[in-house]
Amino acid sequence: MQIKKFFGNWIFLNLLGAVLLFAGLTLGAGLLLNVITKHNQEISVPDLTGKSVPEADKYLAARGMRAEVTDSVYIKRMERGVVYRQNPEPGSHVKKGRRILLTINAVNPKKVTMPNLVGYSLRQAKAELLSRGLNLGRLIYVEDIATNNVLKQLYGNREIKPGTQVESEARIDLVVGLNNLDNMTYVPYVTGMKYLSAVSAVQDNSLNVSGLHFDYTVRDYADSLDAVVYRQTPEISEEPLLMGSEVTLYLTTDVTKVPEKPEPSDSTETLTSFPK
Image (cartoon, rainbow, N blue to C red; front, side):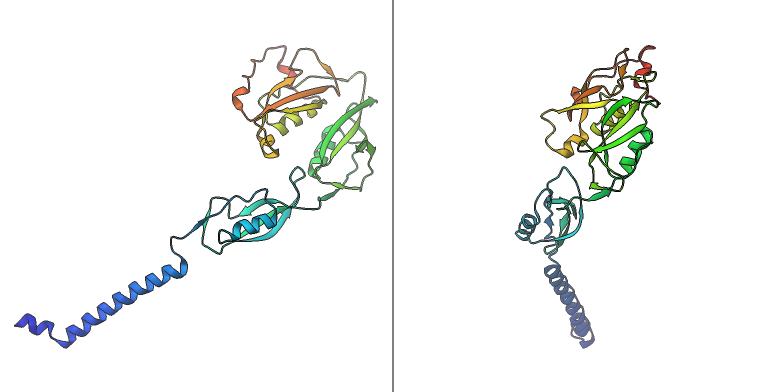
């Protein structure tokens, strides 16, 4: 009787009704929130690298996302107008309707101002070119009192004046002096080095890279940056070479092809030292 009386009490019934109502509202709000936010319905972001903007836009639209170009860079060895970078990155999970921000490779190449390198040492000239976004090309040696003193700067086999606008990453050839009393150098050991580091080391030794041979593992420019030298011609030797001589490099991304570095001997330790 007491229990029946208790459960029949209007206060208890009101409290029970309030609890049930609160639980129902909470559950309903949670379900509604899940529908609105599409909880657990995230989409994987595809890799858009190398696609044109219309291709990327169409590709994303079919997957419930949107493309928006926000920036551009200039990569000389990449097709112009295609996607270079994206945010969020490929493989990220986003909600439907998310904007994917794209950085594209500029259609028009970036221009930089050619500096005046005449009178610089080879090392100074190379550093100045790199700081301007330009690359050192061939070294052309002519008889002069000062070895590795820059006498002329060339672009496309023609002398280029300071202040001229050139494409970013252009290769600038240098005519440099060569004193007959200081005209020999050694081949550096670059086997095992990455592509750009190896080329730089050869140039730092007053030599030219006459050939770059990439094997089948190198499919694009990105691969070339990761490629390492597995063979070089000539190899290091005890005999010095005339400055301006040529070196050929063979590169791969398969590090198993790279031989072990030979043990240095008293006669070969100087072969990797750079000329002053």
